Length: 375
Image (cartoon, rainbow, N blue to C red; front, side, top):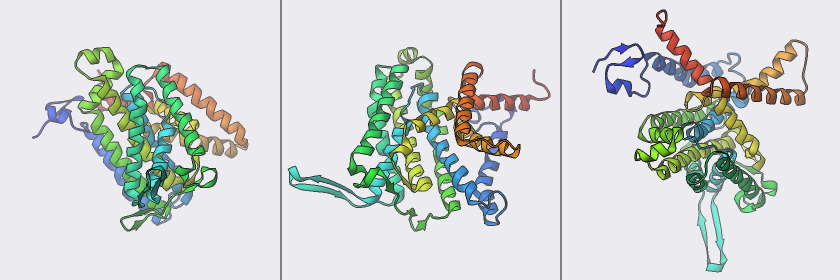
């Protein structure tokens, strides 16, 4: 069926409900995906600066993709469903250690029953996905209090999950196969014969995961379940009077959010770090993800990418710009400047534009679409 665009509205329902209803968005997204999947590998292969450097892939693009994926999971819970969470780092750790145990084999001694339970090592891909599934189960468990508490009290409940799992993975040696200090090494990244070893291969692997899960999240939030989440976020009592079940809406938000965060935690451990310890998923990781969502934009799939880019690029700029100006800064000074800038920016956005940079970009696109007739 052919249709015409009338300003920002569509002349058919199916066109208006398309995942990317605006033509410019489809073209822009297609160009970005083509550059990410084809352009970056080609530029890296021909050693075109800066894509020919392993540093760009290992230290910038890999953490950007994985943290953006984790921030999408946080945004589903915080931005779309309105449930405050300070335990994202714990759910990343659950995904990482569950994937590790499944990827190296699970042995549960039950001597008091007269037998043991042994599960052979699983391939990497099922291990990562099942790690996300285990994170979703724990997310549902800790999402149950959201049925009775909200706001600051819910934040404290999720913070308790953060501290609890920090202690579990550090003090219970079974999760780390009895490795000292809780430090473990990821198994070989073998995906059905494709051994992921080089930085560009790791980048492509993470890009595939991020693309699939971002499209999945985009479809979810624009569908029936997404509208239920947003109704609960905006006014839960009115949503319940309309027939929306808070139990179903909140627990599905916790499950989907925790699943995505758990998969990102497994990728962070397996693909980016290679070896890790529980401190890699401490409270600082949870706060970092929350900052990404607030800065990038609450209730937006684009927001996590903007927030992840800002959080990763700012420390690099604080290192490079003063050095180029002949004023090198110490590591401690740069850390303090990061906190000052993050805090100031979050306060400004919460007051002036609670939906973050994603909303500012959306407003700019609307004005460009209507230019030169803005009224």
